[in-house]
Amino acid sequence: MDFIVPMATQALLPVTGGNAVFPVRRVYCVGQNYASHVAEIGGDSRQPPFFFSKPPDALVPGGGKIAYPPRTSNLQHEVELVVALLDGGADIPVEQALARVFGYAVGIDLTRRDLQSQAKEKGRPWEMSKAFDQSGPIGTLTPATQCGHLTAGCVWLTVNGDTRQDDDIGQMIWNVAEVIANLSTYVTLAAGDLIFTGTPSGVSTVTRGDLIECGIDGVGCLTIELV
Image (spheres, rainbow, N blue to C red):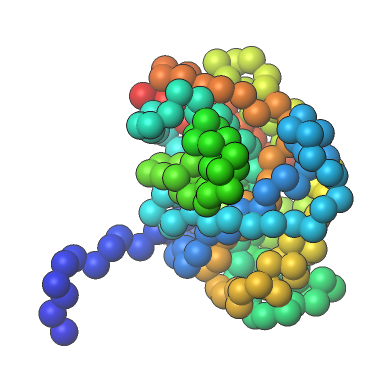
């Protein structure tokens, strides 16, 4: 078989405790999944979850230096618990959802907030505000066999040493099992899928030169520098 252009590089995430890697299939994200974040943007705290996507090649495994993106003057950070699936399916019952989980990581959903606001005002898609190059820094995956299925734990983010986000993943409006079950009513999930599960309050604007550090208890930490 001859390829007209080279095959795209497969997105691979490192896994804690060995040389194994996790190949990524799709990347889903949950919007407005912490009551504190919904409150700061003026929304209703118990609406059904909604979803958007990032392309797998927007992921930046391990973080590090991230290029400040073009076409924005209001880049913002959103620290999130990321769920990695080892199995999928459609219409997954809530009580069976966690059996599909391989592990967890800390991730950052970088957002061109000005472009998102413009899209919302005009009823247009969010892709260019969420799915741009290097918009998904992500840390090492910790298998659920090591960390368990998390129901609580501090989620935090600092910018140049100043705390911007500080909450608990137990405050998610829709927990991990509910998110998986709900998403599986829209699409058939599969092994290799990632789900960014939403961010707490405290999102703020960052600029070139900023050092962003974040973490989730029991999962790990992640550092990026905007250049």
